Amino acid sequence: MGDMRSPRPRKIAGVLAALLIAALGVARWKGGPPSAGSAIRRVEAVAAGDNVARPSEPAPVTEHRVASPASPAAQRSPGAATTGPPVFDLATLAQRAAPQPTTDRDRFRTTEKFTADDLAHPDRYFEAAARVPELRRDEERRDALEYFLAYRAKLERDLAAAGRNAGKRDAVLAVIGRYDAAIARLRGELGTAAP
Image (cartoon, rainbow, N blue to C red; front, side):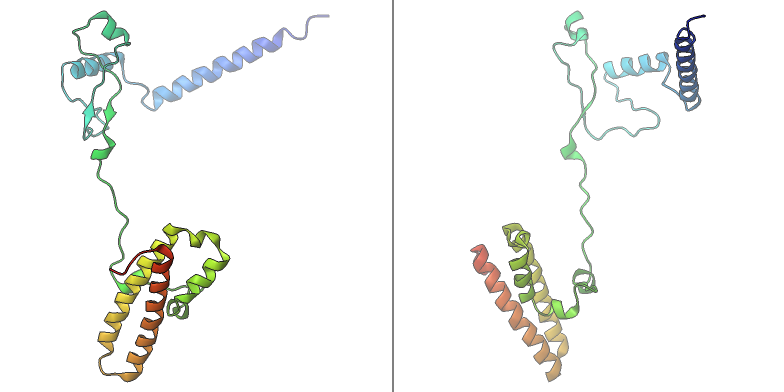
């Protein structure tokens, strides 16, 4: 009987060759790598000091070319410019800030879990902090203090808008009193003085 293992390596090699040919075909169909001539022209242009970007890419904001003394090009000709990967200064990129809420309604939203009643009782923050250790961190306390101060300023605007309506004024003043107490407590926990 013949050896049963001999056709198997041939089949595997045939499958691998077919996969390689298919991969090369797909790469070429999608555009493939740039031709050697265009890559050489781009390297020569960069070496000459031209700022050349690939056709599909915008020119970088800030680009520095760094020549490594250990690179083969630097060892061959010490006076020739070397090309390496570009180094970008990320500090020069514009930072996108998160969109800031434009109205009090956007800033002080309520949900099913955080109702208007919760918003009117800042002392509930301290009840939650007693159960959740993460809320007792200084960063969280600073964030809560900032939020309380912003809501306190909104309450002042609400008080001015209430005018002479005694019922509205009393309700807003009661909430202001609760926020004043919560702000004082948070400042005490953070060890900060009032501005």
